[in-house]
Length: 378
Image 1: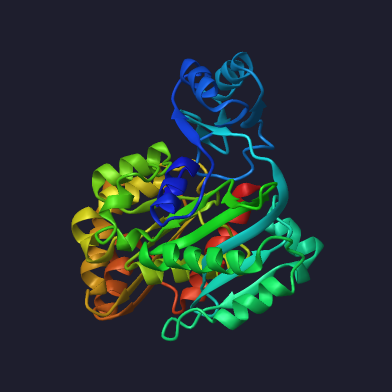
Image 2: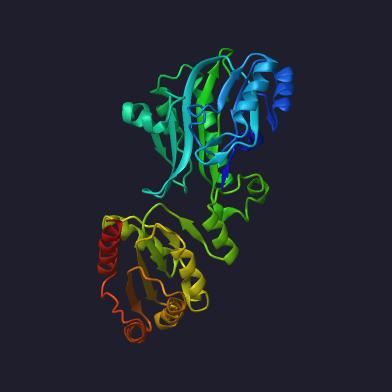
């Protein structure tokens, strides 16, 4: 679950971390009133995405009229597909130095990772490419907790001119936010030292782990609604977890793990998956709906159906898909991979009713689908 800047900063404030004075606004007139209360301000589009400034979604205002005009121009914009429906009007800050600070999940090491740099205010990807040594990486052993000496060493070796112990305390607090709120990412860019020496967060990017929603109801209720395509909305109404992608190879598999593996193999074979959709043991009852959903994407040039039977029988799942195929009668090329419990029965059904012989290896079925999609694109 992603959060707009205003809600992310609200969580930071809850943890005692200083943020600028600001007002969450939904109209240009409210932005004018916010300027009257705050003075010179920054008008910011509230969408859960970066690069807002480059898109024209962050504007300085030095008068009430400027705040009003900026709000008028920003409200209704679309930034990376997200419509701007609200603003954060925030007091301008006298910045002396900018930093980058973040805590995220490093899936390669299966550990939390604290990042710090004395070069803030730019995309971390650009900074990593331009000057990778400027970014300090401190992994956290979740059993031992944060290594304070490693944090102090990272901050001490940076070009930070701020109180270094205060920066260390900031990093520790960000880790507290990350761990106590089940976050995937807590990113402050920039974290700044003001001319009076204070350190505050000028921005906040926050994402919480969806699987922890039941533990974090207080915060999840303030999250930004997930941006969905019309097809994804339709899938949700039908009870499917469907994610639309920009590829041309449709996928149907049982189980999220097998579906993701299938997607990875498609990419490895040089193809592009068109969707994530797993139907599990419900293939028998929901096969027609699932197949109809996948085939409704006009970009699809071929289809992979991948079943692996462990707890669910592949013949039962295949029966559901065959009935759906007979009902919908699609014409695009389809490639099956069926293994596990009920495999012999499933293979026999496909040969008899659809005149299709499943591939013996998943990789072969996917390679054939990638080749067919390439031919279809021609």
